[in-house]
Image 1 (cartoon, rainbow, N blue to C red):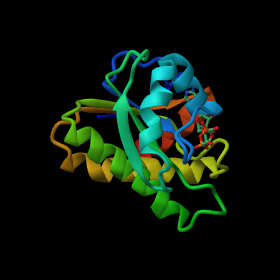
Image 2: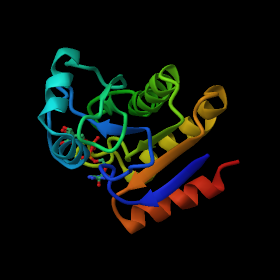
Image 3: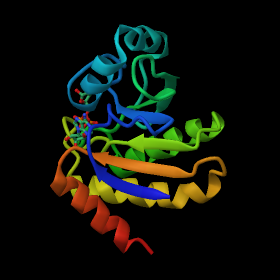
Length: 168
Ligand code: AR6
């Protein structure tokens, strides 16, 4: 049910939803947000405006416009060292994103490593929170069949895969 791949979150055509590592204003930015907004086009920015701002740990859902998916789920991860408790806020992102996916009856959702880029969350800790939260929550999501973690580089993908293999 859970897989870890190296790739670009903006190029996941077989996933019904992709998750955005958003900023509070849900505006285009760098990293994941930049890639998704560029690929989706300006309609995504327009759709986001009435939903902003969001707080750390929150998630909102929009259409995906020019992306090859049905939906984008926008999560605001914690800024490491600023938004506390960071582990709970990061877990909340995954919980709320899965709850929205489930509410929409989606069968597949792809996540990036939320907070692990510009927001400075140490990668291995971020990966543990991500994998533990998704593993613990999926049994309560009857519609969801596949969750994919899309990691930008080979080292990060290998780390996620190792931690996934270590899950009980
Ligand atoms: N596909 C998959 N992973 C990616 C991609 C991509 N196209 N681009 C970057 N990553 P970040 P955050 C990886 O910074 O830490 C933005 O400017 C990246 O290497 O996108 O939650 C927003 O506007 C890292 O491992 O998200 C916010 O202000 C991970 O995805 C802020 O950054 C997350 O990096 C959000 O920061």
